[in-house]
Image 1 (spheres, rainbow, N blue to C red):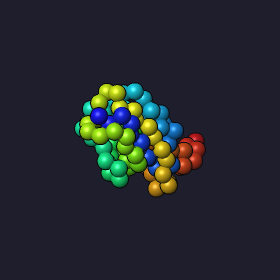
Image 2 (image 1 turned 90 degrees about the vertical axis):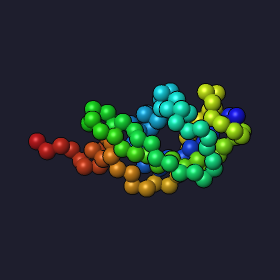
Image 3 (image 1 turned 180 degrees about the vertical axis):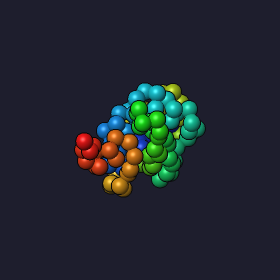
Image 4 (image 1 turned 120 degrees about the vertical axis):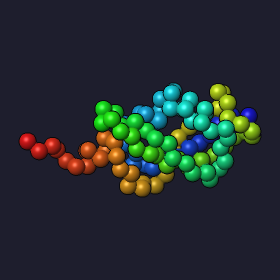
Length: 102
C-alpha cells in the first residue's frame, strides 16, 4: 500500500486554489481517481473557482511516494510548491487585473 504521496503544484496557485486542494473532499477525489502514483508523474486536476461557475486545471507533479502498490483511504497526500508557471484563472486572475472600473 502507498502510505504517503507528495504532490507539487505551481507556487503561483491562488489562495482560493490552495483552499480547494486542501479540503478533505479534494484529497478523497485524488485517492478515488488514482490507483497508484509514480515519482515524476504529471497530471492535471480541475479546481472549482467559486461563484464564477467555471474551473481551471492545476498541473500536479508527483515528487515522492512512500510504500508500494495502490492508493488507499489511509494514504496521506501532502503538497509542496514548485517554480511559478504563470498559472491563470480563479481569483488570482481577477486580482492581477486591478480594481473594477466604476
